[in-house]
Image 1 (cartoon, helix red, strand yellow):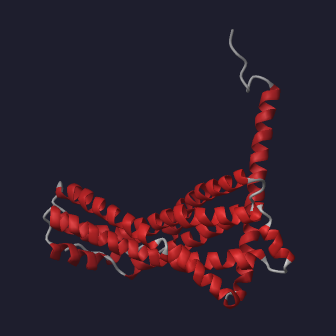
Image 2 (cartoon, one colour):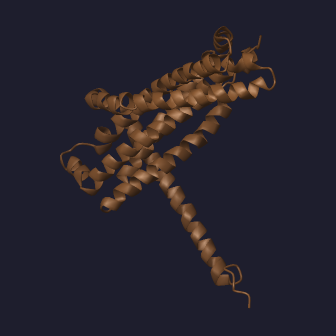
Image 3 (tube, one colour):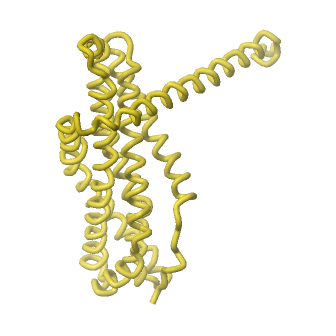
Length: 277
């Protein structure tokens, strides 16, 4: 006898409709709450100078402390990129364009995205855990009792620090990865370094740097904003801290990839200036 399916009865179908409506409206509500949270953060940027000490502390936490892991990731990625692209281009006799391809790929795409991923895993998850711990232990309520705006004190310095520091990290990431690719392509695979760097300089132009900085600044804003927002939404005990950290990593990474697509489609390409010699 065939087992009844959830679609075979009106009750089962109504259950699916109810779940879909609940998911849809909860998503809209969550997006609205995040929009209000972002608006409040922007509104409090006027108090930046008042919280400049916290801003510099967050710059050290997000930028300086993440420099080591970012450069390590750039070193490994650049080495792999130099090897794989040389093997691929060698099949078509196009090794000469390896340097330009590495530079464009890193500054336009891989640099900002990988930097956003690394900083999310380190700084984004850390700030979510810190703020959620303060939330569940009622330290944020204590700030409000003392007349201190929690968003001004906790969120605004972190968002500004992420906005300014992630582009710097992405630039360092791309440069280190470029040198690592050159070491592998020229020192191991046998490509002439003059050809590599000539094509690198010819291909990488200010538009590529513009792509890198705009994307990285957007990703820095996203990962810090999502981390703080998930921390403020934590309710309960120690389990809420873990859930806030998990939600931050998942939501920030998905948001980075989604925004990367839209930014890539909107930013100017400038490929008409690139000529291979």
